[in-house]
Structures are given as structure tokens and as C-alpha cells.
Amino acid sequence: MQTATGSRTGGIGGAHQKKLIGLMMSLFFAFGFCTVLVDTLIPKLKAMFQLSYAEVMLTQFCFFLAYFIVSVPAGWLLTKIGYLRGVVLGLLVMAVGCMLFTPAAILGTYPGFLAALFILASGVTTVQVAANPMTASLGDPAKSHSRLTLAQAFNSVATMVGPIFGSALILKNSVALPDPATLSATALASLRQQEAQSLQLPFFGIALALIALAVLCWAVRRWAPEAKAQPMSASLRLLRNTRLALGAVSIFAYVGAEVSIGSAIANYLMEPRVLGLPIATAGSLVSVYWGLAMVGRFIGFVVLRRVRPGWVLAGCAIGAGTLAAVSGLSGGMVAAVTILSVGLFNSIMFPTIFTLAIEELGEETPQGSGILCLAIVGGAVVPLATGYAADHVGLSLALFVPVVCYVWIAFYGWLTARSAAAPATLGEVLG
Image (spheres, helix red, strand yellow):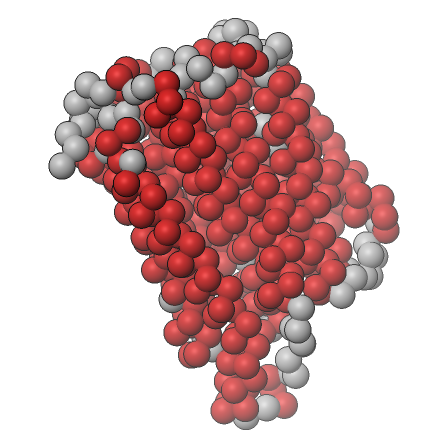
């Protein structure tokens, strides 16, 4: 078994390092694709089980709750088995979660889907806890902001493609079920099982792809840098680091805001006061939101070479908050365009917050990564609050829940800008 001494960290050959960066890009694509499919599931499950906004946001709650439960143990595990072995384990757990969609569909029960999502997310968490710091470590630390932003751009490619995939294979033939009060329990269960069948084949195919990626990671496991062993209690001690602690709050706020908006977009575009679109069309347009995030990350890869990351983060947070507020207070095409455009400003937030927060942690970077990934639980809490607000004041005004999150992120960007490291240069980012 690979020991966690860190002795190989500086010994990665240039060729292996570039190949590992390419492998990291594929990992970011994989967990981005799986994560964004939850957005596609939301209108499907809402219609199948006649759920309120708060009830359907339990999908995001169960998915992102895994980050809170799994992140710190995953960070500790990486110090025992190494980055790529941790990735292999995470990919296999993701595959199991995808396969569990089949029994959930056969049973036709909402809790079954929630359980499958939790297991899928547990694997995603493990992969992400490993992939973020490993990507940041593959080269000059001064270029980590730009390098991780580039990796997140490939994540955004997946989140742009995912809704198109989901709309075509999951939402295309969806129908609104009759009022449960008009059907017998047996008839209702039968209808729900029929609707759920569209979920089995797509997720089974994803499981096979994840297993293939796990085999590839296992084959090159010895190329990866290693992490120094630390006790799990060291993770809590790291919270004394102000930049890390406030960065964790910012990750909580960012993921919560991003997931809240991404989860609501399909239903938002279906509202008569916005565009009144059918479910499949609205679901496919979620790809615009994530596609703009992809474009923004490629732009950010260049911008972060010349502008301090903290200022870029603050500017993007202000832009995202402004667009969300305008959308919530307007209607029609203006509301649709502004809410979809939030994705452009979301683009650089996660990688920039992440790298700002783990700067100067050195050998404690895996534990710091675990704390930051734990904070991704914001994707469970904030969407639930947004759903509760939507049930009481409407989906438009509920957008002000993520607006508050963006205000905090802008503050963190301003706070870190004064001491941020010099940005990377294009030629050195991958070096």
C-alpha cells in the first residue's frame, strides 16, 4: 500500500505530471456530470410524486448532506491510501449509487431515490476531496488559482452537457400524473414505476463509465503525489486559520447559491410569468446556465493571470447577486436571461475560493480540502431554505436567498484581495 509520507510529491516527472493534469480534467468532468443531473431530476420527481418546492429540494439536501458527513473522513483517508487510490474508491461508490437508481425505479418510492443520491454523492465527495488539492499541487503553487479554474472549466463542460443528456433521456416523455386522490394506491404506484423507468438506463450507463475511469486511475496510481499523514483531529485545529475558516463559509454560501439557482431554473422557466415553457424545453435550458459557467471559467483562466484572485471573486459575486435580484423582481424574457446569466459570474468562484482558502497550508492541505468540501453542505441547506421561501413567497422572491450568499462572497473576495499572491502566467500554469 502507498504510504502517506509525501516523499514522492516533488518527484513526479514532467510527462506524468501533464498526464495527471489531463486525468484530473476527466475527473472534474465526471463528478460535474453526475452532480448536475440532480437538477434534471428535480422537475421529474416533483411531477412524479406531486411534491412541494421544499419537499423536492430534499434531493439536493440528501445529495449535499454527503459532503458534510463524508468530507473530513475522506480527507483523513487520503493521507492513508493516497490521492488516486482515494479517487478509485470514490468512483466505485459513485457507480454503486448510479446502479441503485434501478431498484429505486422498480419500487417507485421517493425515499429510494434519495438514498441512491446520497450514496452517489458520497462517492462524488471522496473524488472531489482528492481532485481539488491534487490539481492545485500539480505545478507551481503560485499558479494554482488558474490551474484549478481550468479544471473547473471541464467540470462546466459536463454541467452544460448533463442537462441536455437528462432532458433527452429523462424528461422528454415525462407526463404529469393525475391527482393522487383520484387513484388507488396500486394504480398510483404503477404509474410512478412507469415514469421512473426512464431513469434506469441512463444511470446504469453512467455507472459503467465510472467503473472504466476507476480502472484507469488504478493503473496510474503510483504517479500521484502523496499526502502527509495527519490525525483527524488536526482538521478541526485548522479552523483556527482565519482564511481557511472564512473560506469554508464562502464555499458554503457559493455552493448553496449555485445549487439553489440551478435547481430552480427549470421550474422557474416553466412559470407563466417567466416563459411558461414545457418541462423538457425548460430542463434543456439549464445547460445554458452551466454553459455560461464553462465560458466564464475559460475567461477566468486568462483573467486570473493578471488580476488578483480576490478582486476577481468580489466582482463576480457582485455581478451574480445583481443578476439574481433583477431576475427576481422582473418577468418574461428579462427574468429568464438574467437568471441564466448568473452562471457566467458563478464561473470562477469555487476554484478561486478554494485556492485562496488553502494557500500556505502545506502538508495540511488534504485536511484543509476536507474542511472545504465539508462546507459544500451549503448545497443541502441553502436550496432547502430557497424551496421553503418559494412555497411561501413565490419562486421569484425566493431568489433573494442566494443573493444574500453572494453578498458574503463579495466580502470574502475583498478581504483576501489585500494579501493575495501574484496571479499565474499562461505559460507556467501547467508547469
